[in-house]
Length: 287
Image (spheres, one colour):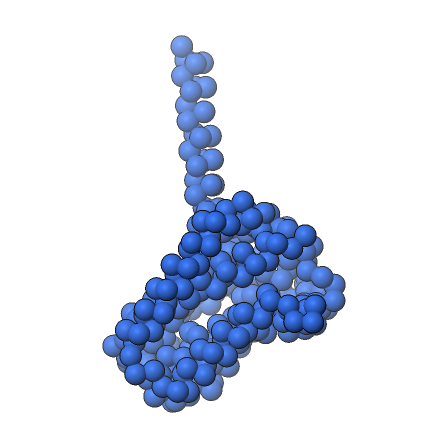
């Protein structure tokens, strides 16, 4: 009896673990984690500049990230060489297509609710949209992500445009905007390098990503330098962050995750932990 009970308990435990893994994979592969993190970061920054519309900006960042990231992966799922992630996308393409449509419509609705969009902020949105579109769509046999040396910079620029520049310009806030934008560009660049380390086995050698050019160890060093540079610039621009423990926690967490990054890290490590840790930075801007 004891032996049968132990086996039954073991089966239940394995079933639960399997269910949790499937749930986590679903959350990560549908880009919920990165979208939530961008939403919190944008909301936190918008709150810090004093706009009462910060929930709308955060929601727009979340919805647009869900639409763009899932749309891009749907497009990439048609390529011959597929990562496990893209294989999952291909199997669930109808469901993801529906998500893209729904989140795109919801993001457009939020833009209407924000109201009084400045012309300059519309140009920012259009610029980010062009980058997002041609990041995967090919012109003359090549998309923007395949251009040597530029892949990671396109990601960083589009993030900064949507999360920082768009709400600031639309609200007429230009105080230290250039420095804040540069700081967050460094931050996004730093936390994105681990993804290029993970993708070494999949990226074309002609893309000349940072790990391809510098090697994994030097790429990690550069990522750490960029995250530290971000912290230094932000502390210089915003003295209120000097006593913000959550800000330091967010920075140190990313430093820790980058230190232990290697080519064999899973999607959960990168798209779960690293993307998820961005939330800490966004939350710190509320204090």
